[in-house]
Image (cartoon, rainbow, N blue to C red; front, side, top):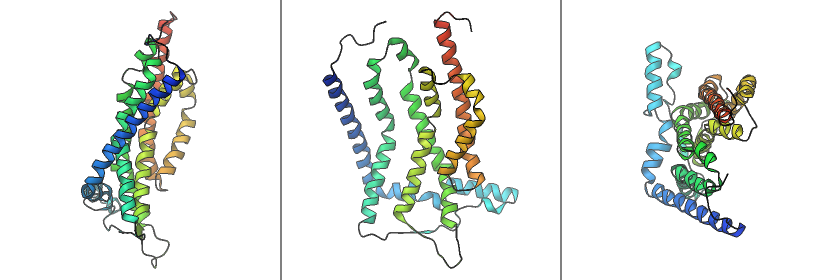
Length: 273
């Protein structure tokens, strides 16, 4: 079987190609980061700081549902804590950091596209066929994870961590850098965790897992996913369940994806299913 490219590239040619893919990727991050830097007020007020306010969509929805069923505990972030800055250059450096993170998130689909442009030509036609749509699925899963984190996990985390007190004598005045770091880390972590079906796809392709293996160790996977959800959420069962449920759904999707890959390989090899 012949690879998709007709000319063999030398090692230095590969390095040169990789360099330009990296340059274009970094340039895309910088472009989006500059745009985020310019729209500072909208990004900080309407996006980053919004989850700690009563007007945020998730907070309003949970409170309305809580009032409907008579559970006042669902009204979260009704008394938002105060964000403070304690460093001379703190707000400026935070502005730059946020711009770069927003640039990374917004340019993620293009970064995956550039990665595919580098890897794709080295694949055989059959492998390219299997990986068709990889850029779309990787990108959409990441963005779904970020959206899930933003609308579900972050409001709960902000409420729990921002309102937790060891004593009534201690007032929470959260450092801006601490708040932004927590929000950013959760969004990026959940975005990456949502790539679980893609990970299962590639592990199946290289023969490391099978549908039977994934089914056999489903309970072990649940424990691992619970541990991951405990790391990126506040230490309460409700938040962990909210995270682990979509992850288990993605795990089941991965099982079906693995089964489909194995079935296609057996069909091509002439082995009856």
